[in-house]
Figure 1 (cartoon, rainbow over the protein chains, first blue to last red):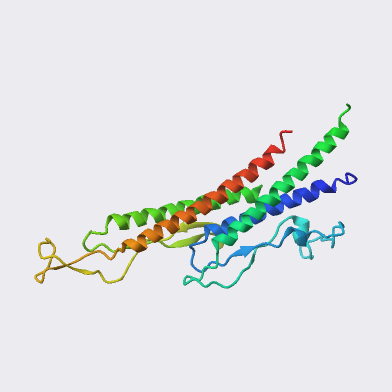
Figure 2: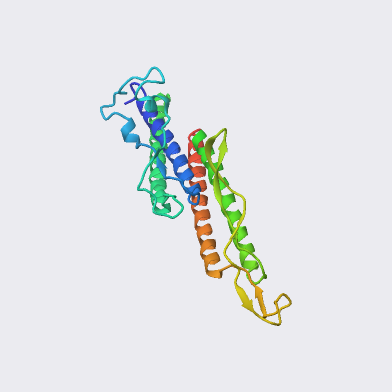
Length: 128
Length: 130
């Protein structure tokens, strides 16, 4: 578990992903009344992490695949059904609220994992 | 962390825009009985910097409702014409009230986003003081 301190990287990545998604959701909610705005979202964190624990494809330059994971940035993509409102806006406040709750849960989890791993580490380092 | 502080400014810009909208709505309601008053419409647009949307929003230029003003029959009114009619305002109370509650809901949603981002930032900072 603490061989390479991967858990800190993963928890950090999870928290960064939550922050990025929160940003996208706040944009959607801010634009609830902007004509012609389409709702956006980013890929879930599970998609960017390989289940086997290996880092996946290595991206050593910007043109390579899997750049999102390497740089910790996610590009927002347009999602959801096409707009049925007269002004061409496809944001639904309800689904944004659901997403926001998910994000908060994810962020709390990441911070708590980070903190508890830190606690274990401090306990094992302390000379008592 | 950068994402989160950006989130705060996006939500704040949206709250500002919604409260401007609420101000125009209350102007409309206050002028329901003003002769010749045209209803003010609020438009929203994205803030662009260097041709790219920053995610923040602002209210655009105020537009006036171009619908015809209703003719009100009141011969004793100082602005009435020879037939006893004067032009009223085209404000409709029902529309203004529903617009006002929509603005309030949107404002609340933005407050919630602001608060959530703020909590996320403070939980991150909490990690520093063990």
